Image (tube, rainbow, N blue to C red; front, side, top):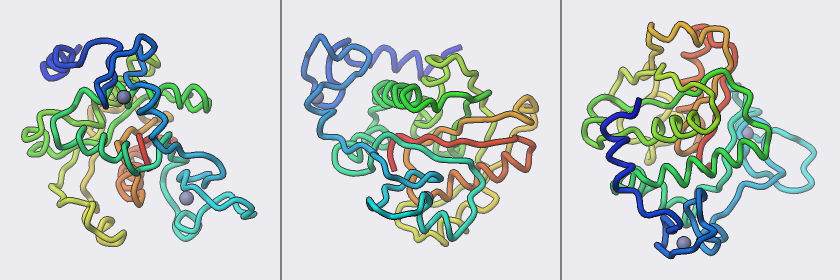
Length: 238
Ligand SMILES: [Zn+2]
Ligand SMILES: [Zn+2]
């Protein structure tokens, strides 16, 4: 069932065939929600990239895993993202998170669905999202990752489970170093006891951005401890 916020978003979403970035009208936009010109400005993650975290790598290197991932074991199987966290997409994600443009979730969601289908990254039992702390949820009114996860679930017929909760109010990650991020996130997540059905399953965890991988890793750790068999990750950008 759609929440009040989601029903409200349906109402404020710009008309069909209008680019959510520049507002131009074009009949070919349809369910892509973005025009050809704006889409061309977005940097895509292209191979070769790290098999674990999808970090772009230099051509000609005879390794398939990046230094970050080689130096430290991560609890998820792999993390994938269609876009590089830069330029236009960075601005769009910022607007999505902080400037009350939650309706961007349809553009991001449809980009993620296309990416998942093109890359055969779609065999999962459940879809989960990185949770916000209750106080942040109240302030913002929506959880951007949950909107995305539910959009993907709706289009892929993989059930969404609201399995994780954030038990610790963490301070902003973006200005922190990797070790500070990890410390900040320690014991920040829990799996809800009501989510027994995800035990022994393979899940896709949805988040907006992959930076150092600390959030994805911490969530994956608690999911594995709970009994989930495998965690895969997808974010809009990295
Ligand atoms: Zn446009
Ligand atoms: Zn890597």
